[in-house]
Length: 498
Image (cartoon, rainbow, N blue to C red; front, side):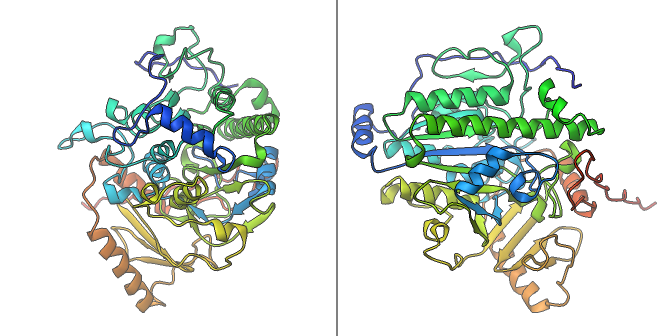
């Protein structure tokens, strides 16, 4: 059984009843005009629900072959729409991945290169967050007449200028940092909780995954008469590993405590996704609601016992296991049910795709990195987008062009993989294809050299931790029902020259 620890976090839960409507400066419509616009277009434009998991393993959902964790609700969502089997996020860790997803722009192009951490010497902490010049998807949709709400994890800056209320969200219930205990303080003392609410009392806290769903459903019900953008930003199954007793009991046969708890957390997340989907149906919204589901990055195998099988790597690397995530888009009657889109897509594509469905003006879609995927998702255009995908994260960088992916690291020659034939990235063929290696390395380097400096950095100790992850051996097969996956085998420690 997992002990429910007391939170030692310092910030009190906050509530700001007067701040019901939260406006990104310079992009807000007057309220009356927004309401008029919303009423005029409500029948023509879909509600948008973005469901984000946190640190979910690629292989830990039923539609990717999980043999251990039943995910019937996520599987039902996948069967109702289009599953993207090669979906990539724009960074292999939480904060920069969310920055890319919510802006529709590659986050390193505006200096968001690292995860958010303690302020580093030489960097102004006032810039430790999503740059205020960047428009979020919520900014753009709010300007198009949508009600906007975020429920759960933010992790894009804790200073007032970065608060969700200032970044396009009308309503916010959740926490600003990167992690939060799932259970309320055992003492009942709310002063140790960082959960806050912008539109009323925080309400009773039970288990955070459940509470995020409850608040998300209430938002939908409040805004059933106008188009809305709901960001259900779950922190499950991110650390701390804490599960409800009844969910742990479902996996009592798994001896490994960490894996058992992780499985219980994912199963609970799936249950709550099911509750959210049922609410959409019960409110009569299914035919006019576009749902996007994905994880913010690959599973951190070394931390939460997640499984990215059959992929290699994990969170913190630009290997497939760090960047490739479960992903589904569903809109009954508009997207074909049960379709698998097998070409690469990027989380940066979701902003232009949903903005086009929302009828956003040309100004509201200007400056986005990604591509509107709609004709590819519906099947009317079978060709993949003609573009390269590029990543830079602390000490690593990568580029994918067609079936080829090149990885650049500071302590070795470039790595080249044909990910169509070798999705587990086991066969480095850089030396067999020197011309292609030089070409891709040149394109990656030219792009990298044009990027701005990071506006903040995480601690330098993370650089070597991330580099070591490239030499680890990762489990790439599904376990039996009551077995833990084979343990990650860390890289051998480097021998220090004397």
